[in-house]
Image (cartoon, rainbow, N blue to C red; front, side, top):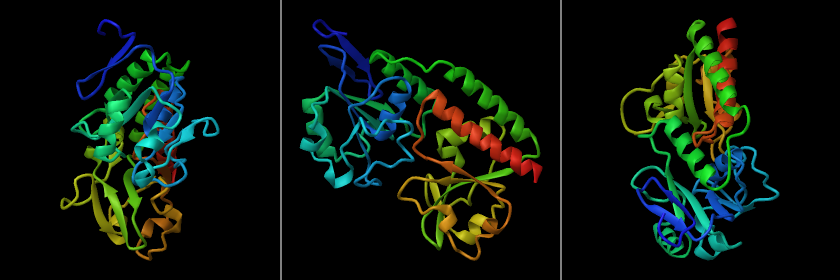
Length: 291
């Protein structure tokens, strides 16, 4: 903290972000805003990415009170004037590496940072989920937030339950995002921090064949079915086709006992959100082991 500044935070670009007083009108990327809310910090506004539309994606907003938080929009709607609506005194953005602000045009991001302090949290594949969660907790604490009572205990319990469920027969899990009636994007588990957590707890995660695609493999539904999942983590973001609307005749699991867990590949990085997700996966594994 330098002389004259009352608040500062070192972000994941290595920049010391400073303000004359602690920010109270935070504008955040939706993932960041929902995570901060779980720590008791209510953003005054949120914005989406190019995947999002005119309305906030409920798969990403967690328990945010959307009637009290201004959604600025996404994509081409995110001009500088729109972002500055409401007079934010801090912007919290996320990056998938290299410090670029996800969801914002680079030129818009540059001009935004000339007007308002910007904190960037790296949520990329090189980070562990625990590390990302710690960074959000540190930022929330600097803004006057605090962990929800009991959240850490709930997370420990959820981890223990999932570890026990993973030992019971080892059901196979596939994480995917429905792309069309012909194709699916199947996640490469080692590229996703939250999927790596599942693997560390003993969950058997099936991987798609090697080939094109760093984070996802684009496959036909027959190839997804050939991975023989007992549990499918299905992308429930608004731009993904709902899995129950896939009518591909060679998507065999839809006619069997496969269990589906809603999955947001842009997870909220709070203990309570993580505990909810692990609990859902544990429940599905327990059910699959009992089939």
